[in-house]
Length: 572
Image 1: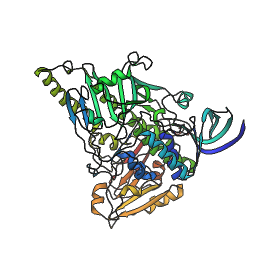
Image 2 (image 1 turned 90 degrees about the vertical axis):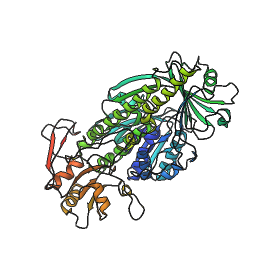
Image 3 (image 1 turned 180 degrees about the vertical axis):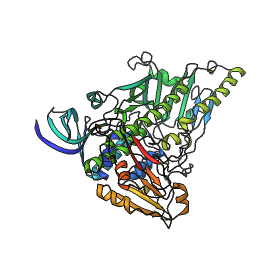
Image 4 (image 1 turned 90 degrees about the horizontal axis):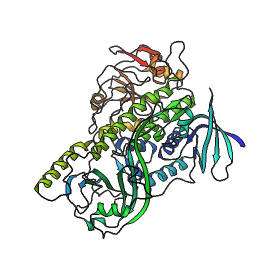
């Protein structure tokens, strides 16, 4: 075995979540080592994720890659419509019109809009950004073989997949971004419970000028519906000639070794003379599984290693990037020493409910896909069948609204139940899948608004903590600043005099975390500023017997400023 090397963070898995974590850590000045068993970042035409929602694009903005994603090649004039039909040359059941990127206005709640960027473009884009940053030792053709953790770190053995040579890597922290079958999760003995939904097969198809061969015009996706429900869909990958054709059903019926792919494509196309080329076949099991915990000691899980969900909604990759947004600052705080022991448990407390929420939304979408009710006549001619198709179109539009309109899923999650968030007694806005109401309530994303210099206020977040002071007579913050300095916690105080911003944030003082989430707010500083700082950095005093990871059920208290309720945090 070669000589031991050292790294602050070892990342197992070089997919989009692992690469994004390496990039975020590098931006924060934290070096990392990333091991990936494949010989390089995947550029194959894989039928995988291709949608980055608005919150993920805000994260890309923070990472400095938003413009590159926006210009990755998907045409901005392609309509985002969904067509419900029996085949491309069969009966039209319904159409959900959605504007192209060029025609779509920017939502008032965010400086970014969602983007199409297929994973075979997104992953190399991330890898190039990681290489430019120069803070990550990227080791391809290398896999994590084993690890043992102790109070001070994690001793890992990594192995080359080509010559089988091994090396010991001593890391302060280990993060498993190693996917659905995560070896890290299994080694920790963390259960992975949920439900198996079905077996699917995706095929990348090249079909030049497909709109010449059917009457429905350009759309983002075509949903093929028969008496058995939605049996397949065809989704544009590049806005031109590449498509992802996905069939749903049982493993027995969709065994790739015995599947007549050409017959199924002819059924979807509705005519036998459309020219096409099969590029890649990829079977997968559609499921919703969530790890019982997202960390154990100094080892964390992120992305598919922590949660899987049906692609119906496009929430899988975006949920993984949300993990990274949270975990990046937690690891920085832990490596630099100003983060307390409760931060590790806070990661599970914050991200696991989001994974369950997003996964449940995806599962509901899939249930609407495969529902068979009111579909027995869809392939038949005549007035009765016409009436059924018209009614089915209305039903699908309503039931699948949250799949095609998921702004609330993207933006509206919160960490209000986190042990490092200080509640203020205010009520949360409704958590609606398709709509989003901005709020500066603790545990929620700090609201977006445009500043006079053309930046978004969220561009001010992403380094250390930021304490916003609203009004020309803003409340004194000296005690909070002093407490942060004594703890080594990075804190920047910014005064905002715009009345619109003050109204949006609702309190004269608002403390925003490094991930852009509100940690605390009040009209005056709390009586015990040190307790506030210790609370939000995960270092609040715990009762005797609480372990170093903050996983007993102790409760930490401190009193807020005048007129503010007592804050408390439950350890998990």
